[in-house]
Length: 104
Image 1 (tube, rainbow, N blue to C red):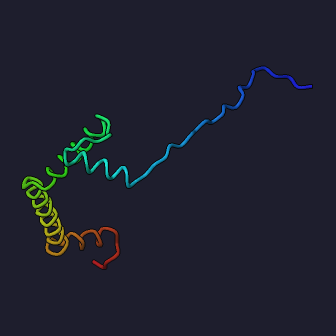
Image 2: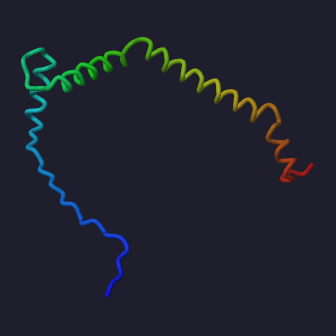
Image 3: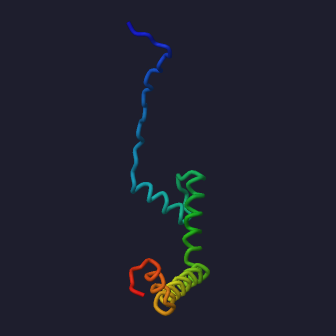
């Protein structure tokens, strides 16, 4: 005989019903919406389509190119500064002497 303090819930059923998906039709509807023709896209899908098009245009602007150029410049300065510190300041020799890896 089993002694149960708490009642365990029964397992829930999973009732997933997939809908038919046609990638060619989806692409066709999206293309029609891009060109401004009547399409069966919802308002939310049309808004997403407009936003993605706007973001792609913004990514190709001059400000993005300037940001990339500035980032590359910072990387080059950091690498050259690191090379200078390692090769010309004797910092590595001091560390090696500190840990006793090089004879004094």
